[in-house]
Image (cartoon, rainbow, N blue to C red; front, side):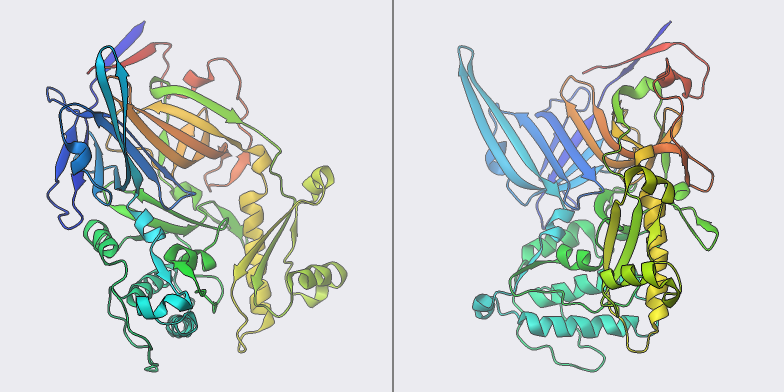
Length: 489
């Protein structure tokens, strides 16, 4: 029995000027019974990228859109709903043509990045030879000022991730001259005169993202006190400052549009479960999950590999009393001197694969008032988390899944889970694409595929991979019907 479902995709693109966030300058639509100049579009969001990317093409007929649509205009992409699924900024426009017997065939393309790419690329130039031109303070002055501001927040309690992000962003805006910079508690003077650098870029961010655009996970506090040299005597971006402290692979920093159509910068410790003092911290189970059923499936390719295997895990806090090598040597030769083991070893896999260490350095420093045990305990906990997160990668499936985009309001987003083939996967990236007259699709890059328990802990390899009709088995309904989803113009 064949069930045929007819659908008609109705995407829409709105284009805005940076100073008019509520009224679009242009609307390109593929809605039913409407003339359209929109021929195709695609966009990508990924947990590995703060910038994202998009492109769209329009008909090259008798219109002046190529000249009227300009870089730094803002693009909102809609997929059948009233809220956008992607918001970006035009960076490039391309015109090409082919001469044939039928006449001139033009192709017009526009491309760019997510609006958060403006934040990622927001520059503060501290090259000393340009300081008089830019009217900005020296790197040395700015570093001292930043340390004072951070210390005000972390004197009595651990520094919250969101507070760190907001402080550095506000301070950064003060340095480039687009926002007033308040003095620190000790009234330390901020020398130098601010300039009007990046003013239009800031206006775009403010008009289309607002002032509250950070989304953090459960790990609200940075595990150790921080005191770093954030700025160098050259080109600095705010993303570099954030990743000085919140660096991969332990932290994720990416952008996505939420279900309300708002662009958010997601900054969080990895959303994977771990055990600590016998207690399971179920982050995995709190991630939204969508089930992929066979009617929506186009194709998939999954892989199990031993290319990335770790048997030893070591988290080191830079600025602690000993070097990383000294901690390892002391633990191996005189472990009683360290209260808790910092080096975590998977003895079973060590016998198979040998020493394959995952070492992660965390930026921080040892306060004079803090005991050494506090630092070593922090490293112990972080090493345990590394083992929980990365210790079984050789048992997890990775790959790609392509599905039909039904323009549902509840779309699969990067940084969430999908249920597929009897297991669960983490969605690393989502790539939406559509062309006029074709079937809209979403290509997912997925990792960490396997069986998980109710606590969100990885249990085992998916046991039924490769068996006949596995694609139909886990749909949740007993049917052998084939489904053909066709898209009408």
